[in-house]
Structure formats: C-alpha cells, structure tokens
Length: 506
Image 1 (cartoon, rainbow, N blue to C red):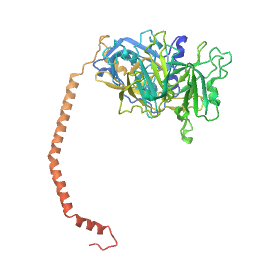
Image 2 (cartoon, rainbow, N blue to C red):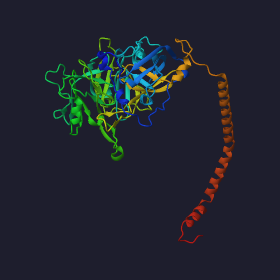
Image 3 (cartoon, rainbow, N blue to C red):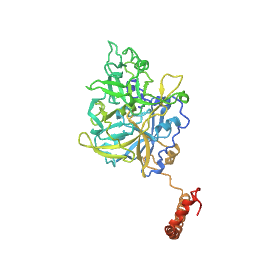
Image 4 (cartoon, one colour):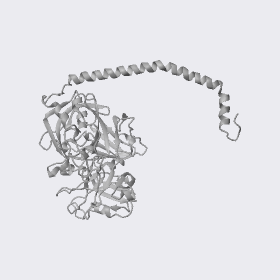
C-alpha cells in the first residue's frame, strides 16, 4: 500500500493495492471491534489541531484526514517520543476494519514528505526512533535498517538488520531503483516445474527500450501482481494474460532480478491462498495462487510495475537498509531465502534480541499473521481481496500505554492511527502547541470512588464469610472420609451384590 502522488513522475512508486481492497462490497460482518486510540486517556499527548493532515491512497475512496499528534510510542522494546498522524475519518467501516487501529508505514521518507495541501508530514517511525537527536529514545543512533519475513506459523519484524539463521545462504543485496520506494528490476518471471521448461510471462520485444520491469516490494499488498498491458509496446503480450492462459499445473515461480547472480525461486505452495467464489455453497472453498492483475496503467515513459505483495515475504526475508539513503542515494534491498528450520517469534515471546549479520544487535518483534483470502465475482475476470492485509504488529501509544494493532506496510512511509472524531474535540479550546485534556467531572469522579469503595467492602465481607466456614466444611469432609475407610469392606460388598441381578441379594 503506497501513498498517492499527484505528479506523474512519482506515480510509479505510489500506486497501491488499497484500491483492490475496496473494489468489492464487504462481507456482512467486517466492522472492526478493535478499540481506537483515545487521546483523552493519554497524559503525555500533544495533539496539534493547528497542523491538519490530508492523505490520498491510490483509490479516491481512501482519503484520510486528521491532525498531527505527538506522544510516547513503543515498538517491541524500542521507544521514543514521536510525531504521527491521528486520522479522524475513514471512507467506510470496511476500510477501518481492514486497517485495524492504523498503519505502520516503513517506506522511504522521500516517497512523500508533504500531504495533499502542502503540509509537512511526520518522519517515518523507524527513522524517528533511530535519529541520534530523538527525544526520550532508547534506539537513538541504532542502524536505520530492518528485515521482514513470514512463515505459515507467523511473521517477524527484525529491527537493526537481519538474523543470519533466518535465511539459507547469503543475503543478496541490490540498490533500489528509486529513492522513493523499495523497487527492484525484474527481467524474467516464469511458471512451471523447472526453469528450462517454464513459461515466460515477460516477453520483451526485440527493440524494447528496457529489458526489465520495476517491481515494488509492498507488504501491504496481498498478492503477486502482474501488469495487465503490453507496457507501451515493449512486451509482445500482457504478462497477466499469459498467466491466465497457462493451462498446465505448475509447481514453481522463477524470478530473475537484474544485478543479482542467483535467481529467486518460489514454491507454488507459498503463493496458495483460500479462493472463494459464488459457487462455494455447491463446491466448497478451493486454493489458488495469489496472483492478480495490476489494476492501473502508467503513461509513457513510465512502466506499470510488478508488485511483490505479502505472499512474497513467505518465501524470502527482505532487508531494507536506509542507513545510507538520501534524496539522491536509494536504499539498499536484501533478499534471502527463508530457512524453513527457523522459528519465528510466537505471541508468548513477543520480542527478543539476537546477534545480527554484522555482529550488532537485532531486535525481533512478533507480528500477527492473518492469511489472505481471495474473492472472485462471476461478472469480473480479476480476483479481489476484501479482507485487505496480512500482517499486524502491536504498538503501544501514550501514558499509560494503549496497545494498538497496526498494519505493517513497506509501501508507504507514514505512521498513523485512527481516533474517534469526538475524542479530538476533547482538545478543542486548548492551546495548539500544548497537550490538553478535559478535566474529569468531580461528581462523576466521586461517584466512581464510592462505587469502588463499596465493591471492595463487599468483596472483603464475602472473603471473611468464606474463611469462617472453611474449617467447618473441612471437618465434615474429614469425618466422612474416616467413616468410609472404616466401613469400606461392607460398602463394597453391598455394591457388588446390588449390581449382580443373577445372585440373591444379601
């Protein structure tokens, strides 16, 4: 998922899958039951009503607006006082349900530094935490890089680098094609049982100006997404059309990346997801590869990108190194085949520290993993994903901390939380540069204190009664036990003859 740009020059790194997420009517029960962030409960928040924010994602229905907030933020064991977006609106309840409590954008800061009205946007969370001048941060000065990976059991965000034991072989590194997105050049995609006999999906013409297509690494998109056009005549046929026409079953997808000597190999099982159709009631749910068409087309000279969505991260651990990036120097991307023997963090572990590839500390953070489900409409060729995204991390915001469930999104740079618009009014009338909380009504506070006192008194009386009666109950149980031990032979004989109808009762 990436932010929408008005300028065509930047559009290649900001069109995203959020349009897919809202393309189909939502299932009946999708309204999120998750509690929203409540600024009124945080004593440390600074909500800047004088700093409005308005952001467009790819689809017109995904405009978000709100204000800039600043509060204590904790991700795993990393914490700092950071600025972020407080969204007071969402286009519909379906979008709200898909996004949980908000979006944790981990994309490059240069993708978009101003909102639709020209207001400066908050710095991305990871860069803010690791900034040497960060306020109240225990991560200041740490490496500005992270890795993300997933398995069938769960997912893991690795801050500060990557864990060597999580991959097989070496981490293959390549500079991004752009300073504004995580973009790699793909010259070939094949599907089949072996590389030599597989069907090529990228059929470049003999005189093509380019022999690669840019591919965006976007954890906020659900699937592998292929261009549904001929890239302004550079391809003989649409890659997605070739994929649809491929009748034989296939076992692997082979991807060739320019600048990397070893090709990428994805098992079909890593791409398979539940696929629901209007025939489910008769035939049941099936599984199919999570491959979809890109639903937009770029104007020349730009090319419609390939999107390597969340299923790609189940096959490869991807490292994103922002330590040397600048407006003119792109970030470095690393690709490593996931080690099937590696145990990702479980929810009980939550976070831990491990030595990284360079000997430094890597902080591992648990990420919940909700499997993608595809829905196919009978009157449309493409498949759509109304369930949205797969990966959610827990972040704690405010004082006292409020746990929030946010989408991990490598396709956008902004960290934002949904809040209730009524809670924003709590701050109306307060200075724009100061945290402001509405004082508690003294009558309500006193009534609440009386209620708590009464409850404690009743609990104490109940416990006193239990303590008084417990010895009596114990004595009765002991007497019954002694009587049973004394007369147990008589009792067992009577039970034996009572259950034998063919013998005379004695």
